[in-house]
Length: 397
Image (cartoon, rainbow, N blue to C red; front, side):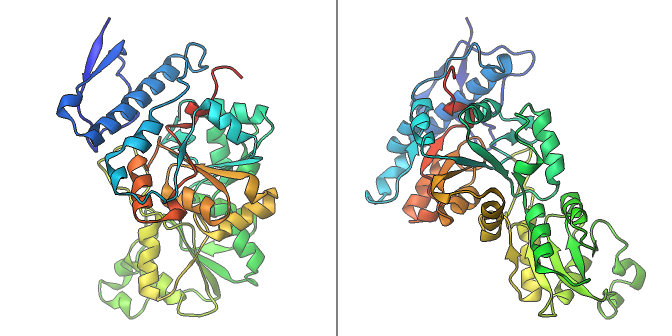
């Protein structure tokens, strides 16, 4: 029998760090609470549970050997957290879920909307237990929609990823929604009357716009006007296209000063639409010590330079909700949004009358819920919380 003495967690510790290929999973873990603060204890219990859970699913993907606890310490984390003492007792509360309680909640829900990264997958890997929850919901005839704020890839590409990760074939292009699809739909419905789109964005936007026959330019790497005219001259002779009907802005790795300047100048015309995919500040990556800016900073720069506010289509904004309601005919009162961010996923659900659940397998944690309670941000406090999707599945179904 082996054991491991667990250190206090640090900000750089991954919740999903499993033992390496030459290591064996310990039979038990010694938690040295004497040298830890209460908040560290809370974080460590959660970390150890998720590490164990991930390891078990790696060893037994079909969950045949795994017995899941009926009640997890999420309830203790919520009730006994050291920050809880500063809360107004009348503030909005969040209920932790286990398989039994989720089964009861599920009876009042027809449609489940899932975020993707940090919920269904993490980077290029499947989130352990998530495919099994999807199977569970499909068996109970629930409608499933995947809503991601990532517009770098098209719905077709994400559908292939879901299939590769082992998800049920009912999760396909037709059940996927991302800002690229909503942007293309918005432009198509607006009618550009032959005008073009100045596009700052990745392949996903291009593919969705191609599908609807929308003409665009400006995306990707291009020879800079700085190179052709000189560092100062380009400011007086920037090359602009005619007949531009919209500026669409998303994450793009080739974004630079010239693109910023062109976008701001196209937006001088009041009739030119300004559409943003999303305003997320950062996006998740494999290294927690590296910040990866998302579309938000790019959108903010163009807002500042142009003096105009965009129509933002991604979560938590209304265009994504309207697109889903129109396409899937959902009943908001019987729909649940499940995600890993309080400021996008939970807020999206709360703003549009949906039930909400935060899973702790991605970005935001218990502390974020309590901070939102302390700040009276009811729009970012979920109805429910669970450590991960796999924590909601009964042992047998």
